[in-house]
Length: 469
Image 1: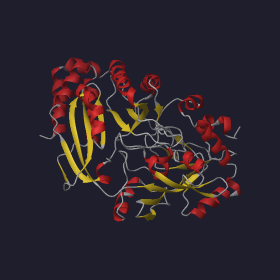
Image 2 (image 1 turned 180 degrees about the horizontal axis):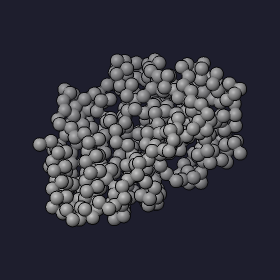
Image 3 (image 1 turned 45 degrees about the horizontal axis):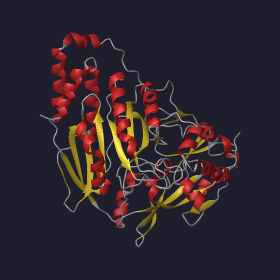
Image 4 (image 1 turned 180 degrees about the vertical axis):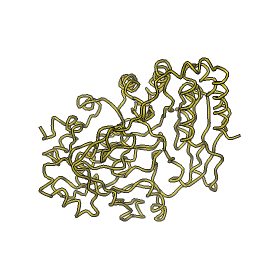
């Protein structure tokens, strides 16, 4: 019997055995769809952000991008670069012009001696693995989704996991920035260093990054091991395992007492894989368990916990770029905060306790990852080894009550929010969290004094130095 069919059988048996209670639960209001009343030209992956811009443009060359910025008809319009729409925060929405670099992609050149590669900013991560492999290079790390555009993921300090590995922005050795005046700035630690430190996590507010030079490593193969364990066992060993393995993360399944760990180690073993549990099917099964068993948290915990204990360890050996990422077809909204490493366990326990007390409708797993400190000015990992805790809500559900309840916990333990994830912080909050906040504002003001790259959200964040009123 397939694993997920076994879980469905357990749920169905529980429903039949407790039929009166299950019928009473049928009176609960159905989840409302998050569809807009009228079609809009742009919205993000989850549908939480949308806008009606005056235009959407995708230049096919650097010259076309410059012409777009210098066009007299565009001089008064807000310009916002847009990637693949995987951010949940309000970084993109504008009634001005959305600029996609989807036609500016690919490997430009590489330096074999330094193991560096120059890549167009519109390139999706999923388009990079093979081209880099062909020039004997590989990225140090990847996040769990590979459909993000390089420029967009660097703008928000997107990260994978690994206590000894930085966010992807930490591996940028150079970048080219086109300013509001159409000037191309070649930036690195030696050239325009202040712009370089600001632009590696620039929120698309300094100009448009056209290409990036990545510090890479030689190709490597990973052994990925996934193991299902009781939450207390996971928490007892998480810090030690994060230090021992190249990559380590874990997920907790709410209302189950169980979770799974995922760790990667470099190996010379041939490619192979055991049976893998599909994450998208798994999310749907957790939703079904919630729908039919939320009326009895004890039974839900018994069914889910018992089922999870039957799952076997999964092992997959593959080239690095094939082993980090997975498809995410079940949409959600997300809040993620990055906590000082010494604080994460206390915060995580509070989060679990609050959700399992007040939000029985939650079914998406919580995700915990480890990230090494870097020196990009607006990186949430600036000068701080961190642990990232992410919570999710199904895209058709109202995320605000749970996120509003959890955010004070994240903040109390010194968390910095992921720039691309939902949060309610303002300019004063960020200034307190980022030692280089004022330095960033000064660079931003010098590059874009008229605020051409600021939508309403960013104008509020940078109001003191935006030049936009």
